[in-house]
Image 1 (spheres, each protein chain N blue to C red):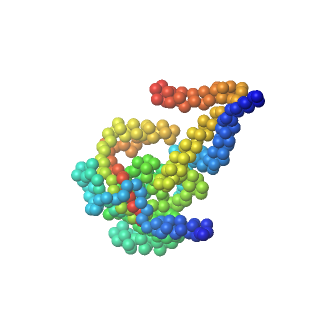
Image 2 (image 1 turned 90 degrees about the vertical axis):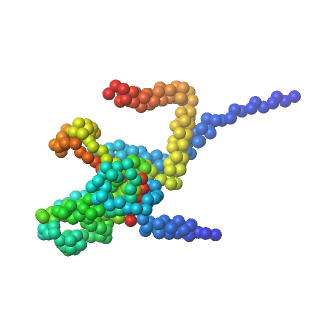
Image 3 (image 1 turned 90 degrees about the horizontal axis):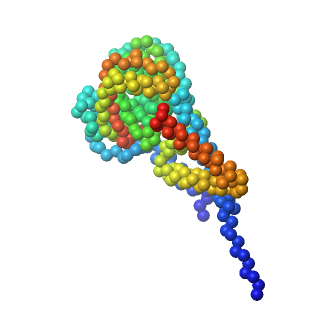
Length: 151
Length: 195
């Protein structure tokens, strides 16, 4: 008869072994070819709407919900945004090596749209809206994340 | 001829109370965890319910922005003497070097030598509660969370019929249940259509 301690070891040892490898988030990675972050940022129109696989370091993690990370490589960073609640990156991922897949999106925010976002943020945080950083239309290039592996 | 004994009605109220009691015992830990986590996450705009963050500014000798990253990492480490396991380094631009350690990150401004040190610690217990509440583990936890939601439904319905009489559902229960139901409905109408 197996003792509870033996059963606990049978559960814990595979768990520890899997923890030592890459931590997987979301959908399994499917693409073979990697694209450089710098390439996407240099020519977002060519990649917009396309599925890409990128590799880099996790340079930032969303502290509140783990709903985005920034992937850095070759002195460039791109945001990898995941659906809230579907994937949650832990802060411990910061500084790790990540291979991630998702769809590149490009959005141009007009001054009015940025002001509206400022108003919304100000209302949520109960503070006055700050339009100081708005200097003109802003282009946002990011990856809508599907899956990632962090080592 | 002896009269047939009257058939006793099924004591459903007793079973109802017993179900409510036992499901309540089983789910009390999860209910507390979800309630505490709910309070914590509700106020996410004013504090971080998952992590406690400590920031510190340190000063080291300025470093040459023309040096290769590996040399900059060695020079910064020699001056900072960080604790813990070194994970990686990254230069987001020519003037900045980020060092990532197991428990902290260091952002070095190379021309001035100013270093922003950020140490992040998961809040004990609360972090675990929040992760479970937000179903971060997925897999089997999804099933457990579904079972818990079903248990809450059982608790809600059985709770309505524990007592009979003036303090039962058809007495004060009806008023209080009505008031409790009116709050979310009224708020939704106000928020969606009137505010």
